[in-house]
Amino acid sequence: MNFDIPYIVCSVLCFVPAIVFHEVMHGFAAYKLGDPTAKKSGRLSLNPLKHIDPFGTVIMPLMLIAMNLPVFGYAKPVPYNPSYFKDPRKGDLIVGISGPAANFVLACAGAAVAAIMYFTMYPTLVQAYMAQSFLYYFFWMYLPMFVMINLYLMFFNLLPVPPLDGSSIFAFILPVKYLPKYYRIQQYAMPVFLLVVLVLPYILHFNPIGIYLDWTAGNVFDLLYSFMG
Image (cartoon, rainbow, N blue to C red):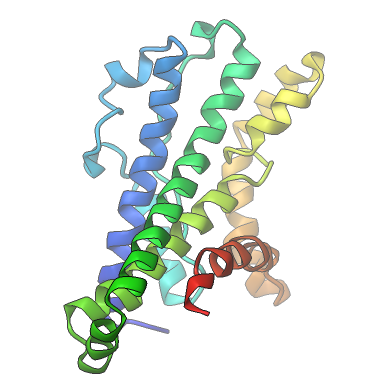
């Protein structure tokens, strides 16, 4: 269990921007497709308070930190109305993947900043590591954590199961006649999914989500940070 204060502070400062941009991009994509719902409800704002879900944004990430598990979670879903879209199924897909896409862009941006710093000021970074100065926390702790958390959120949300963003891919390829039943099932998916993610790994001593994130987010992180050898 890790209750190191700098670690927790860095986790919060990485996680909050990641979920805020994730949700804002959902709303922005819907807005560009003709749906004003998110804009009218004030959800295109970068103010974190507009997007906080008490459990998904606060309690769940803290539980994962306490259990030394990958930090991920969710914010309050951005409302949108597919009836505004010219093609509701295609629009739903675009809105769904826009959040994970935003996390991927943030991860690449964080890795790019780290690479620039590494190649332009490596001796200074080594001194910062030895002295554990502010630069140490920013380069050696914050940036890699920022990249990893965004990758975790991206791949976690791409799982093709309700209520995650990846379910929009599933809905896109599902025959139209099955959509009403699918949307009914989706209403009850969150409690079941949280049970699978948080409880079953401790009962079965097997964490498929952790394995999936290590294989996906972990490998992409290694690729983005390959400049460090």
